[in-house]
Image (tube, rainbow, N blue to C red):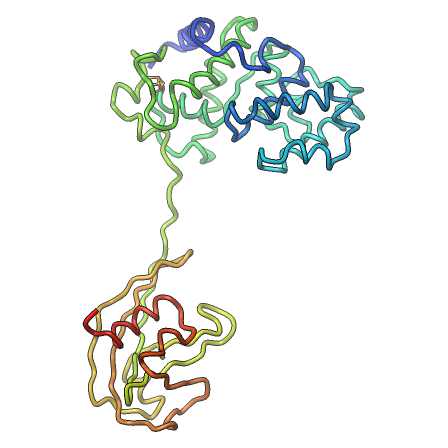
Length: 349
Ligand code: SF4
């Protein structure tokens, strides 16, 4: 692990020598411009933001102009950037800066964070760039860099890891406030240009010799992805009752899984047949079928039961229909049931 002080020194040195210096929102300490760029850059690539940023500044050269604009004009200029809550908050924020702060952005990260749409990291970025405040940023790119350099395991979105990363980020700040703009820009540049989400460009990195992820070859593992919630598994037996080359299907109640669709009776074959006054003359278990729903996985266990001819009658309950096997798959059945039917209708498939 690098010495804490050397982290900031290395980063500032690298940013000044190899970082980005020509982005349209650099070389200004105007909090309106910096804030606008920071909001636009959330979840959005620099190349996408540049033309939007230029159009916004042309239409709204200062915070008062933005505050006074109709919401429709703001949203129209934002169209295509996505995440429209950002545009609405942007507009509200400008109005609040004018109405509450006399048209001047607060001069501290804490004050900025009180405004609509400005989170802790965005507030810190604006305060670092415009006022050289010693305050830490921690967006997705910075989390990735810190997790890799310091070998921090666990999903960064979890409360525990998030807290740990904020605490670490605070300890890494440069001693000299004057270094804050280059330091903050350096974190952003490193995450955007070298320590990228895919395969990072480690040989050019200022932390190449001390980075834990590089040392251990864990660049692909860090930061840890969001843990997947375990998907519940269910299983159910479906009784494919066939008589005279026709299959018994029953309509599901309107609410619930497969509501309103036709499905073979579900349950233990003996009980299913008995409840309907049917007697199997032949019974065969068919291969299981797995189907993934959004919230669970279902294993369908089909059992084919041939019963004696039923004519048109023979059903003990309403809602049942005997449907020609060839037509059954097209009769408004859910996809996995269609697959089960094809096992019976086309046994050679
Ligand atoms: S050495 Fe590689 S993985 Fe480590 S911080 Fe640098 S670019 Fe990222």
